[in-house]
Length: 269
Length: 264
Image (cartoon, rainbow over all chains, first blue to last red; front, side, top):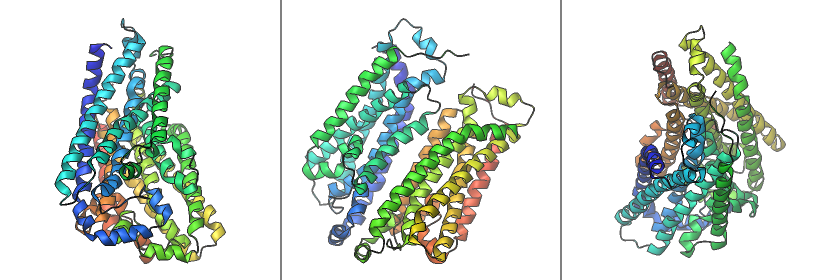
């Protein structure tokens, strides 16, 4: 790792990290503050959720969810947090090295007496630090907000911790997959459509997969691996599925190093 | 005219990709519908759902066992797809020149900057209309087997018009961002942020009655498919707000682009 590359990358990212962290914290605040007004009709809601058609519950990941309990409600809003964080991580992944080629700074960077492996490591660590900061903000604000708005209800702390800790691996998935795709294609013109496609595509896959009854195919999406409903109910990860995430992360990272080491860099005209 | 044709060609691939997404979505949706169609049990279940939940996902007042009701639910997702594509196209069409370092070339051509904006706007407008027609065609083709009545076709026309206005709103905002942002990279990020923000707002505004006022801030709430289905007309207030947003964004786009510094 080269300290100056890391520092530069981190600084470039810092603004975006802060904006994302604040945005997600605000999202959490808005949703959690609504909890007390929604949970008032506890009995009513529970009765009615039991009557929901299964397709609908599956679409919004509510098949084993109890909106009147603290964590039940939290896992409902957690899906929106996951969508945001997935977009953030894939955005960082796609832009990590492709930005150098787009801004025509790649030849400058690669002409420095630093190996490509080192460059990639420094860049990855900088992006990871950014994601870690966002995660910490989400962890802290979730705990504080849940404590403030839970009223006299209780909740399972361990399940909440598991839910929140899973976020980091969840983001790592999108970061590494985004990175390896950006190295597989010839040129990334604009990062946003790629990032939106990866993050939203995975979400839609997990939402619609159940309804179509294709339970094998949807296993590729991390929205299934870190299904908040499952984690809250069992206070544990769905380990076989989480390991799929881990395997994908390792493969994409190794692939990225291999691809980047021998990548052709188009020179500016 | 040259710019217009050039941009149409450059955007064709993107239009095809979005078209395929819409068609896939319609196919998946209609396969879900086959489970609901004419099923009285399902209707009884829907009647018992908590109103907050139904409002949040815009499923209120929809009879999911009929084609119109089901299409009303699909409308929310159509709106999401159409507005994402419009915002992307709008913010990209202007800012991509700076990204690809072609802006110095195109602005030295013997035409004014406002003509460049006009040509580019028309090109993405054609793209939006193309996507709308694809959505319309796919919907018509998919529901044909259920032989809907003329009321459904009237509702479909109306909701397509609503979709078009939403496309225009996000297109205009996107173009304005592309013209006004000093750094090209920000344009599409801000457009996406606005889109996600207003979408989440539209969900929140449905959750609780005290938050109803938020609907004025979210274009996703301007055209409620439930109201369209029942009353077969648009709400004049929201039409005015939409027109205001579109006109202001376009005027802002022309003003800022003709006097901006280029990011080179």
